[in-house]
Amino acid sequence: MKTIIITGGAGFIGSHVVRLFVNKYPDYRIVNLDALTYAGNLANLSDIENAPNYMFVRGDITDAAFLTDLFAQYQPDGVIHLAAESHVDRSITDPMSFVMTNVVGTVNLLNAAKACWQANAGGFEGKRFYHVSTDEVYGSLHNDNEFFTEETAYDPQSPYSASKAASDHFVRAYGNTYKLPVVLSNCSNNYGPNHFPEKLIPLMIHNIQTNKPLPVYGKGENVRDWLYVVDHARAIDVIFHNGRLGETYNIGGFNEWKNIDLVHLLCRIMDQKLGRPEGTSAQLITYVTDRAGHDLRYAIDAHKIMNELGWQPSLQFEEGLAKTVDWFLANQEWLNNVTSGAYQGYYEGMYANR
Ligand code: NAD
Ligand code: DAU
Image 1 (tube, helix red, strand yellow):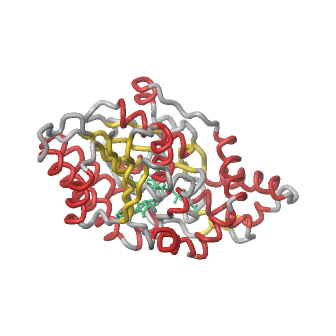
Image 2 (cartoon, protein in one colour):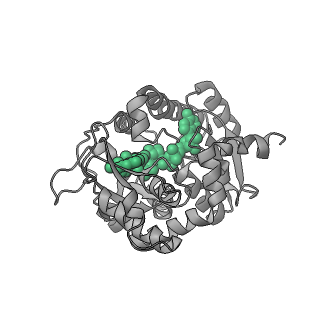
């Protein structure tokens, strides 16, 4: 049996990765390591929390001593590292939390994996450290015909992207210096179930439903390349198993949308779903002060992962967005618990006596 530590498994993307691995690989032991910050929510995993090959460990990757003990105890064969501070707006008001978790936490994990694997007779043989990263490390595109490739120079513009760029560099440095078996991916914007409602799509869905203003930053002209979160999880699966060591893979949906067009599309979908006259929700759109240093456009060239590993997105955007809206409307309790803060008691309620 292989043991895989997945960090950040109670978050948005991590929960989909944990679910996919637990269901698809019954012979793996999946250890979900998560600090349960404001972004972590074990309700995201309620359907698999009793699976025999799944376990949850609450812990903070900024704690090096804790990680040393954890790796000694579980002797993992692989690490899939998603734990991070992930919201750009929060990084503007509190950059140090991003340095701590994204940079220091990642280096702590690299050290723990390296020490644990070096202490075994087999060394690094058959081991793998996978760092899940973002396209924001490449900065901003300004010409319509440009795309981020794996060769694009790093040019991070926000404290968040600077911290992710630093962590990518450390992962590559450990691969180069210590020959740690590493692999990386840089993905575009995800959307789908369990998305925390501070990010554009779930925030808009929630505000439309509750008749609150829809805050569009600046003129709404910024462009993002959206990918359904389950397609990202599928990409992580193929890269973890078949990606070449030392390589980076860009992941994206070839699906660019200006923010304002996306918000209008969401308004139309929500008007239909809620039985409101067309145009009702769009009246909630409110232009607000732009995000400081707001990157204009992200767009991924995903040909490497498509050609080399045979991955491709499974869902068209309209289908994925409709599924997402349906999920949020059907999971009102999840949304209410998150927006009220009640979800933060889930861990204590579910695990306190185990
Ligand atoms: P998220 O904010 O939803 O979840 C992050 C998870 O990490 C949470 O469960 C949180 O509790 C945990 N965490 C935070 N600090 C921790 C710490 N110090 N120790 C242990 N756990 C900690 O994030 P997400 O959107 O799911 O993103 C996951 C990863 O994917 C991140 O590394 C992010 O940079 C990357 N990424 C995200 C996107 C996106 O569109 N959301 C796109 C590309 C890459
Ligand atoms: O590209 C990958 C990145 O995508 C990930 O690395 C990040 O973790 C993830 O949060 C996401 O970053 P963005 O900043 O692109 O996502 P966000 O949902 O915060 O914003 C999307 C766009 O919408 C961006 O141009 C800012 C704008 N926006 C956002 C919010 C929250 C608004 O206009 N209004 C809003 O209220």
